[in-house]
Amino acid sequence: MLRIISPVDGSVYAERPYADPQAIRDTLTSASEAQNSWKLVSIAERGAICSKAIDAFVADKDRISDELAWQMGRPIRFGPGEVGGFEERARYMISIAEQALKPVDVGPKDGFVRYIKREPVGVVLTIAPWNFPFMTAVNSIIPALMAGNAVILKHAQQTLLCAERIADAFVAAGLPEGLFQVLHMSHDQTAEVIQSPEINFVAFTGSVPAGATMERNAAGRFIGMGLELGGKDPAYVCADVDVNYAAENLVDGAFFNTGQSCCGIERIYVHEDVYDAFVARFCEVVRGYVLGSPMDPETTLGPLVTTKAADFVRGQIDDAVAAGATALIDTSKFTRDEAGTPYMAPQVLVDVDHSMRVMTEESFGPVVGIMKVRDDDQAVELMNDSEFGLTASIWTSSQDTAIAIGDRINTGTFFMNRCDALDPALAWTGVKNTGRGCTLSSVGYEAITRPKSYHLRVDIDK
Image (cartoon, rainbow, N blue to C red; front, side):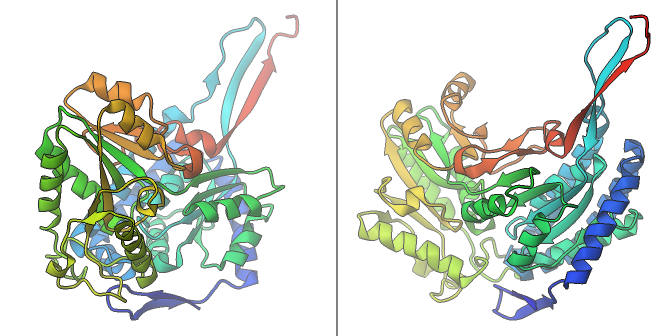
């Protein structure tokens, strides 16, 4: 059985049996068969059904928010934001599908008609994580269906009910049977499914080691694969910044979702001219957080997903302090901070450097290190000193400065005066060990389609 152990109180919140071999085989077969018909359906009709599914999903937001809190610890006050993010991304990708999927006109040639059509790849396997269980899944699900593919969703064990809620929405919308299905599988079963000839693309979000496993699982299949993996996203606070604005927004970027975000802020570099003022304001905002049960509407910082995850972050902090870092937050002021549980207070570390794990290793929890830098060049050097490259943010009053620095940073997205955000009109992608591939925007449709060239001689005398 797959069991959800709730971080709220350690109870078994839900459990499901693993899919049996026949159910997996039937799912693969029905997905492939359904896709053969779906690819012939107009984009407008696909969009109408997907839009109805989004309507049904949003209408269920209260239950979704409650279940989300119990499954992974997100404070219930923030649950509607996950639903809203799902809706925004889905509706945007529906709205651009007609344009993004239209055939490419390669220009006139006497006696010929020539164009490149974007064909669906077939069956897409989406493997979704627990930390943003709806917003990560939708990045591939809706574009895949809009492009004429079928989708099989394998969700993280911790949030397996999220997969079922998405399935409920598609049933309510009348999506033809077989086009969207959910499988609750073990790692070994997932590996076998990836090797199945019915699977034509894998969209995976998770850790770097797990991403490497996905590539090994697909070896020899010659199928497409999108991998959104880890992050250690940096921010640079320039000398000309609005200190209060930068501090308040970077606190949110570091500690929203208890720091469990692949694009959350995990390290901050601050120009020496504003360092002291920034750190003071940053810590002041952090001390205002309320750590507690995610079911309490007053809570702004819930538990981490597991005690193991919390202990990993505690270990990073302890190692850093032992190596000379200074912890600025008195965790005793957070009454729910309890060793041996997933509940831990936020922490801000200074006197840190890149010899410490907390500045180089993904934390995925409520801790951030802040370093003083002398100039832009040192900031860029430190920001690039990472195996990851998902997002980076520049905090400055000058657009020219932001662009000049952003051009030098090895990252998939760079922000000016915001962070930990996603715009569905922009490509969501990363470099280095953050993975490969792209979702969202018109570019995101390229991965889940294949080009098919039409070369028609319409005048045999030419």
